[in-house]
Amino acid sequence: MTIQWFPGHMAKARREVTEKLKLVDVIFELVDARIPYSSRNPMIDEIIQHKPRIVLLNKADMADKAVTEQWLRYYREKGITALAINSQAGTGLKQIVQESKILLKDKFDRLKSKGVKPRAIRAMIVGIPNAGKSTLINRLAGKNIAQTGNRPGVTKSQQWIKIGKELELLDTPGILWPKFEDQQVGTKLAVTGAIKDTILNLQDLAVYALRFLEKHYPERLQERYKLSELPEEIVELFDQIGDFRGCRMPGGYVDYDKVAELVIREIRTEKLGPLSFERPEDLSSSVYEIEGDSQK
Figure 1 (cartoon, rainbow, N blue to C red):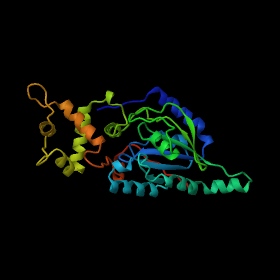
Figure 2 (cartoon, helix red, strand yellow):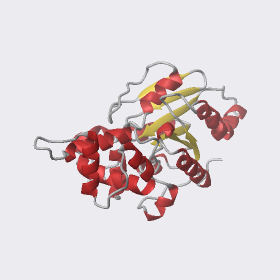
Figure 3 (cartoon, one colour):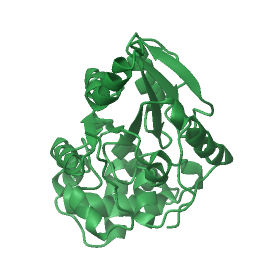
Figure 4 (cartoon, rainbow, N blue to C red):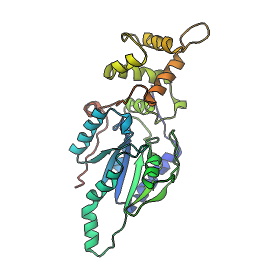
């Protein structure tokens, strides 16, 4: 399955991020904790270069906790500050300002020595669509400032948002890269909802998701759909799920489109529990390489 999606406003957003970079002290790079690697935009390294950054693994409640810990260790080893957060519930958000202060201490000490009055930390939030940027901003601000929506491409423009006296945020539209060199990256983004369903083949997506669950979370798959064992043939697996959930067409045949839609929806709504679709160990076979920062 080939996935490409790069709306025009995203190309514009990249230019705007580059232009505004000099106005901020630190970058908050928001990724999906279920796919911390695939939900990174590889253009970000190129755009922000050596600007200090904090990687925020959002939706950590939806990810496998043990795998998220692996990712946090991975980032630490790369010299990158990373935090697991849940912007919906507000978990882990206090650490963002604390870590920003640590990261920027030397810079602000230099400014103070030159007689510059203390000011709020200026940060830019970047990330792919549907990563939860607007929800994070609203949580930090304590009120609904940024527009939110459980679909990609809600934020279309930039805005400065004051978060108390210590932080000012520059929100930016989500940026998705124009070409997926590794098609599995696009597939993982699609499974977790970062790409509009209207351009997807949900059956292909469900096949990928079910095969992944068979390998990494077989017990959950069997429990959810009351399977005594997992069949080798994917068609048989579709049939058994369709039988159990009543996904049938006139004539009694299993409706594979409905089965696919059901599986993807239940993955996204955590009916199969918290899931992580990639691990740091998977990166050895990937096209992209995450660049480390010498931040401290």
